[in-house]
Length: 260
Image (cartoon, rainbow, N blue to C red; front, side, top):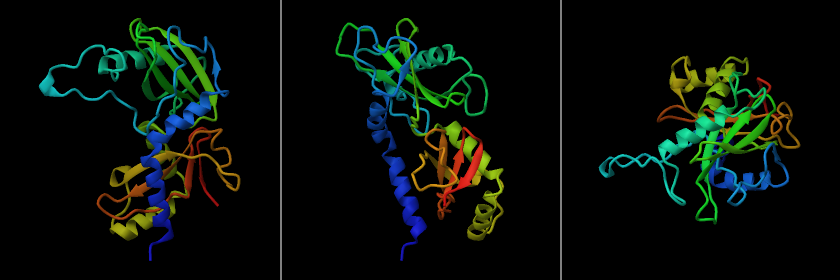
């Protein structure tokens, strides 16, 4: 008989596997009627920017094939962003003023999540990138639209209660908070039972994180959705899963809860 927790973990892993696909649809709905703009909501010379597929690992432009020579500095049309374009867009987005914004570690400036090319039907429009950030002070998802030719930020948009998948930095912080909390004692005990070794470091696990939004019946994590929250799937490398999918870390509130 399959253990209930294992089925739950497998279902969650499947959900994470399709997160990058569903995030586009979810965020597209999210920005309609939910976002606020500090600059015009329409990008000059193009269509309204579509939201990104924010991924658990910060997205990067595809690596260049070494047999084809160095990657071009700039792409054309609907080509994927080149590494140079991504660097320029990310630098410009993070440098743009966002009063009081903080990242997942509490440092000044928002948390970088992901990027995408802003597509347009106008063949003469300059290439633009949408860079997605999270402001932990305001608990808002922020989109910066960057003109890749000039390096200028042409639009800044913010929306509350929009929770794309977490970055690696966010997952690492959530794990750190969990392991420092008393609720991790049971996990440590189970780890030692299944491996015969004491748990001393997150390096002893393969960890997959996903954002969590509270459901009506939830207790202990009712702010999730308004706050940025993460839960995990944990596996011993080449070994068993250790189910802690009932644990949710509230990164905004710096709290750890067990769903009941």
